Length: 107
Length: 203
Image (tube, rainbow over all chains, first blue to last red; front, side, top):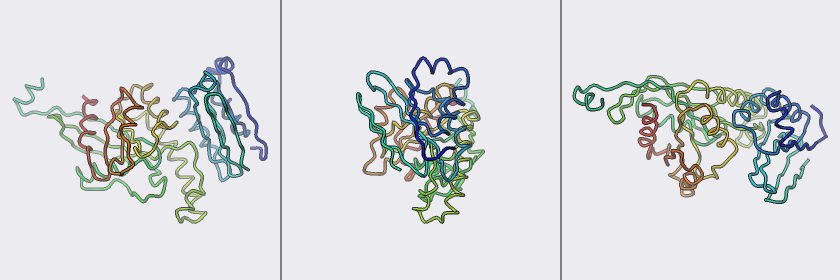
């Protein structure tokens, strides 16, 4: 896992559809382990969410604690889901209203 | 059929494995303890107030409960609390040493994986929700969604109604069209009603 670098990736609904049946869990896992905040258009099916969590917990340690998942139902008239790593060295503060989203990293 | 059972004083016996799921600190073990204490005279697990006290799945078998003339032979499965992350530093706040906290975090992590796998092994589920907190968490949504997709019947126990700040009505509003029973696992209030709802879904 790379330290000191945080990336934000926005995954559109169309891109999500393309990878949904072809290694979506691995796709998300790779990004989270690479310190990416993943913003998905839409939401993750509950089965996929639990599968993702089980995978993630295989990689947790004293630096990487897991993830936080937040679904915002009506962000700019669409649903988005934010998945971000919880780490020892930084915390992410997410503030969202229906038309405003801010991600603040506290290192 | 029910009339015949009554006439011959014969009860139908139903066996089921009931999984108790929920977020960390929702009161799962307190609920399981209340049930096992009442029917078997034993406690299933410790309740200390430190998060992730239950880190291994515990199954208590052969609990015989009679609800509305139906004899239920149930196993109750107390599962570790589900979380999306486990920060070992949280445990240090409760007086654990760093080594103890790290060990607990590792065990709790495995516990979450085991709890999520346990969906596959239960016939019915009780989802315990802390009614003193806002209930629409990502975890509760994931739990309910998993059970619905797998077609596993469930009842939501809106727990901690013994506390002043409890708002079980909010849980009812949010989970409209889903069975919600306000309970206190601590005092046992409405636990009988919860078991009746569970029994209805076992027939």
